Length: 274
Ligand code: DAK
Image 1 (cartoon, rainbow, N blue to C red):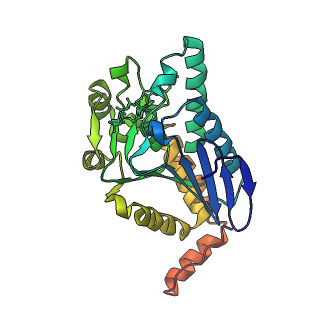
Image 2: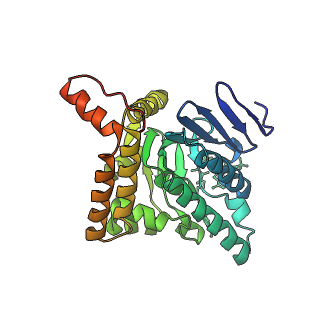
């Protein structure tokens, strides 16, 4: 496929860059990281292009679900690019690190719900990217881990923080300090992955998740996502206060009336996002 940069609209928005592309159709944006020869490892070009693509998604209020995946059926993202990193000076590394952390923060804080379609290796920065997503659906051939200490490094795109929030410090230390690479089924048991399916069923599993999300009330979805995010940022009292505020705000939406009326009238709700 040609990899020039261009937009075209109708019926889809397609944005092809050299290493990352975006296809937006209706309310769903699909982002693919594409450096198959390096198993989709993240170099500074990927960081730049992914950042532009995420900017595109941030500015499109119609996008409700974002799927992030890697090109091919072998690798989601095999980490930050080791060949490039091996030549970085401390200052260059700091710049790379800061841009990577900020980008993953932006992905974590998108209003849309994000789904990592983990189609193979998700190591180092690859797992960190998946951990910044809301939901992780993986194929059985996925292998996940944060093996940075084996390279003389530590996870630096937020991995020490996000993995610990998902699995707790005991398991996080066990995985990071031993540089463990987990099979998909093991990662599923730890709760790092949410679903694992045969590779041939990955797209239908992701589609099912997308359909379910698109059938939920949009305002409630974003409110729930933000409230859950704040659970790791604040104390119990403030978190609950925020939860009450979000919940009361839902009572001002047409969608709440529609959802409750639909239940009482024994029909499927039709949400409008208002
Ligand atoms: N970077 C660059 N190239 C990679 C790569 C990576 N992370 N992973 C794989 N490749 C390349 C291989 O070099 C090989 O290239 P050629 O030799 O063909 O040119 C090609 O992809 C195919 O890889 P293999 O031949 O090794 O394929 P296998 O199926 O045998 O093995 C593997 C796949 C994923 C198990 C293996 O490639 C592997 O172990 N890769 C490294 C995985 C890894 O350690 N990932 C963590 C990287 S560290 C920071 C910011 C962020 C980070 C760090 C610092 N700051 C700036 C401070 C993040 C760090 C990381 O992510």
